[in-house]
Length: 216
Image 1 (cartoon, one colour):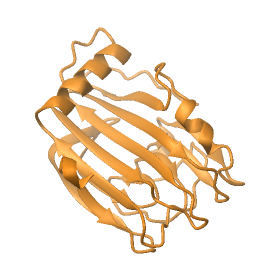
Image 2 (cartoon, one colour):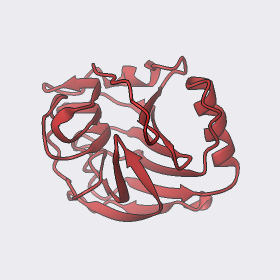
Image 3 (cartoon, rainbow, N blue to C red):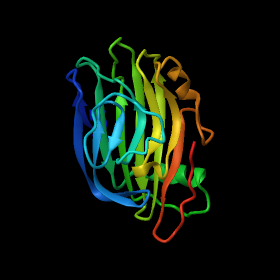
């Protein structure tokens, strides 16, 4: 939150996006970006704002790279907050370094840059609370993303979660339900790294290295 130095965006009841210029470029499956759009619908995009709230199953075979911690209708009628912060030093980098070396051993990784986007108790049309977070981590060579799930109340709107790339050359679907997010409370208990509510992915293996594709 603001007390930790986050830039907070107060919701106004509409579909909104916020452009963030990175201090350090982030490479995502071979494409390097200097900006991201933090969209209030639970989506990070890199080339344009996409505030629409209609999730789609992965692979989408579209023309955008994006990370979707929880793509759904997060319009909160002016009550919730979504926020972001960038880190280039301090305890957040230390923790990111420890986590990545635990989840992806053998790389001698030291984080030099972390970007955190949080959708904190953004309320949907029926006033349920949802807390999700996306974390981008880099050492200038390797790139990783973490997705965190806190409380996610059941909602009646369609939901999608995971990541996708241009042409869906790489993608991963954590969750998708076109009929409503009635099962999303379980997300805080799901994981691919042994920590409930946390998902971790290698999204760039460094120049000259082949990235093993992970698809679901």
